Amino acid sequence: MNIVVLAKKDFGNSAFQMVQAVRKVTDHRIHLVVAQHGNYEDGEKYFDYCIADYKKDLPMPDTQRSVQDVINERKHVKAQIKNELSKVQKLINEADIIHWKGDWLPSDHFSSYLHIPEGKKTIISVSGSGFRRRNKARHPMAQLGWFPIRDYIERSDYRTAFTPDLNYPEYQGVYTQQAIDSTSKSFLWENSARPIIAHSPSHRGKKGTDIFLKAISELRNSRFKFDVDIIENVTKTECIERKKNATIFFDQVGVGFYGNAALEAMQFGIPTIAGIPDFAYKQSGRKLTLGTCPVIRVYPTVDSIVDAIVRLFAPPAFKPKMSTIAKRTKEFCDGFHSYEAVGAMWDDIYKELR
Image (cartoon, rainbow, N blue to C red; front, side, top):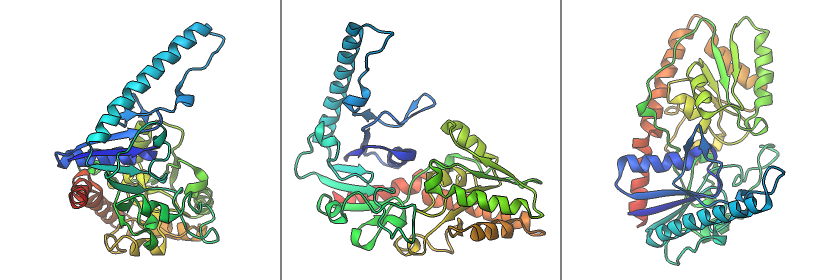
């Protein structure tokens, strides 16, 4: 089966991870096309094709180059983009399924460069704040969505959400969990005489970092001794290396679910704390329950975070309690979020749609 995944932006490389999962367990021909060059990290590219934005990608004149040099360079860039577009259009023409990933509507942005033939089976997978619909009074950091839900329904044959908090009943979709190559990673959690609580916010406001830091400030006045590692403005490689050393990983509160940042810690068995809304488990389609998900659930309040950490630190049960949670975390990540599990899930969906 031929599948083309189109992602205007692939935040956290979640589309790339999904594509890698499908490749690992199936023989489908699947390609990831992104619309911006942002998915480069540590010399690696996390896509197959990039349809760059002309205005952002073309070089601009400066004092170091002549006008003719800039003109020649712009011609070269345009030729590269045109060649890339030609390759992608051929893939789309041959595709059995067009899979749109992200909160943008199908054809948004890509329609300026590519033609999607009528009759192609279409999937939409939403994944972030651009789709979020919840009441701002309850979720003050959340947006209310860029487009009406009916537009997603009218432009797709099948709809999924990468986190269950986005899988609203009116969306008429299913929850499809994010992927990470966890089975290739070892269990690394270790008990430490001085625990490390790590947090890696991509955006402090969205992740509830201010609430977390207030909770940490309160905890420092307690009898517990620990260190805090705020991981930000570093490469992906360094971020993951520092997560390996964590005793506890704090993901986010306030909006969403646990996401890519959490999975990067969970794959090593690092116990993880996250804000999980009440409705998220219900909207998971019974894939997740309080009993099966080892993520330590908190509410977006200082007291809730403090209570959760105190319960984890409280002696004399600290070591066996944390060790059990760590093992459950690794087992859960391998069984539910691994390439093997997620790849098999998407194989079933693609076959059902075709």
